[in-house]
Length: 146
Ligand code: HEC
Image (cartoon, rainbow, N blue to C red; front, side, top):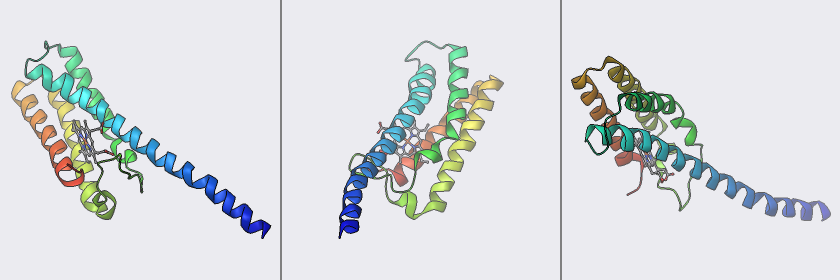
């Protein structure tokens, strides 16, 4: 009886801790994407659209950062990191091969973007930025709730 009571108490203590973990994982993931959006959208795309002055050093730095961050994306999706506070769809874990493909495309295009920026070839840069934007959109369309 005493053992059972202890187990029940331990369970009661563990459950909220696990939930807090999930919320932490989601917060980390959403913060991760905010940083990616900052570097890719608020810096790179904004400079290309002349919404902020072009600063080539900062532009190249952003491409380096996105490339470095891309490899971290998969770690922001631990199994079970779902809640009402997250727009991540269950499909991410139910269809791991399809999701792994999106992640691989993201990493590949981040690498290509970095190479394009280093080349300083405007056409190549434009194409690489567009391809990267397509990767964001594809994953959001398929694996993120509205
Ligand atoms: C491999 C899939 C995938 C790719 C690629 C991807 N995203 Fe996302 N993104 C997600 C998912 C899933 C969420 C929802 C996360 C959540 O709410 O837990 C998300 C959320 C976001 C958010 C909202 C974060 C918040 O505060 O809730 C932003 C901003 C974002 N992504 C930007 C981008 C940008 C910019 C790119 C491309 C450079 C990109 N994403 C590429 C899957 C992806």
